[in-house]
Length: 410
Image (cartoon, rainbow, N blue to C red; front, side):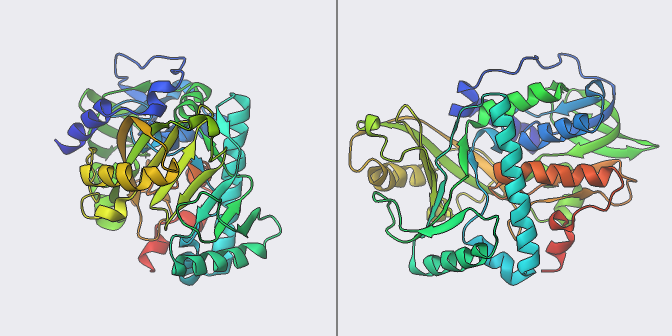
């Protein structure tokens, strides 16, 4: 069974974030509950934030159950760069062309709200973070033009903290950059585990979903550990959504894109040449940050083997890792020797326009809801997508920004 084998891969392919975070205060349940009020499928930052939002709005934590095929954070949430980004670079120009300035301005406002919500959690729980802003660095002449257009659009917004600047002196690309002053890098594992503590929901691990059926006034989940009867089910499984319900495979195209990530210690670690900023460049295909102890986390380069990385399975892409080691890393270490400490991979779920989706499954009377397709911006958008989804559960008119209807209109 594909979904079960994918979860086994996630368990085996661990990461810096997962290994260095303080564990959750509560252990997973050993026995799968038979009946719950709300079952949330996927215990990443989106699913856990759904639980937090429901509790915030008066829900009983005892009525919530987080179900994960591996363990909390073992999907994309624990395999990323930990970038809390607001204005996602050159893709903004595609959005302006497709949807217009009003839509994009609303999306950027949501982006900023998400950043403040994450910042509040970071401060309340003392989650390690680096507050040096973000640099989106153009990798070629066309991209430089796109960044100028983005900066011009953002410059008309008095709330924007984005400016066009020269590249950092050691940048692999010596073209202009979009600098966003209040963006920051977060410890992904710590952030996720503290949110899990905050929601106080019960959770189960190593429990893959094999089927979901709306029955009577509720929903039945068929899992590898037994049946769960819930009044409502919320799928927060991102790239795995098409594997869990035929509706997603049929109507919401969410495609997998795998990323390779590397952690290394350069001989000049004490110099910390990259400071506390977070960096991404060349249409987002390259990203890196340097930790206070001098180690560098870097990832991406999937454009160097797009076909090989268009897969849902975790695993090393040796071709890309060799390019990282011999071409990309020497640029980041300024030629200094380095020691590779570990590598891992993660799989992101992309929508056609790289904006997440959320909503209610048709003909389920609100009993089955979903969110996903974060397209590499999960840390930067998850909280506001969750707010939008929970609004729709409350019978309010949901914000159309994250509706899948916009994809069908492209």
